Length: 175
Image 1: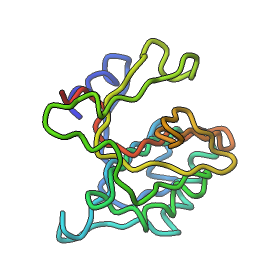
Image 2 (image 1 turned 30 degrees about the horizontal axis):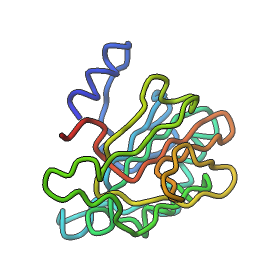
Image 3 (image 1 turned 180 degrees about the vertical axis):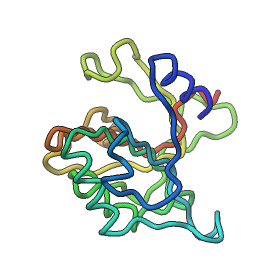
């Protein structure tokens, strides 16, 4: 994520890490809040699971104009059940599945075509994501990128804010 952070900084962004539970006050000076790969009990001794109170605080912040980026992971490598408390507020639900299982050097198994005019990926035609969870959407969420009937990336307009969700935490070329 170092490189992703440098991109934000190149465009004038300031990076901060929120190490405690999110509140409207703690998010007030932020334009973008990124949540990556929620921990499972096997990954950390004291995971901080999503709960209704925290989800409501974040949803209020989004409604007031915040941009929320949710980078989940596949089942088994990400706590999805409790985490869904948050994305469900925007019509997004991560499935507890595992898609794009890339074996060895079969990188093409992780390829997802990006349709033109998504409004997000202006010059990107293909991404590579492996071992991802797919997404279900209901209003106000919309599928931004689909493949073989699965929603890979979803977005939602919520009040004055926006949510972007993908079931993969790695926004770089892993290959």
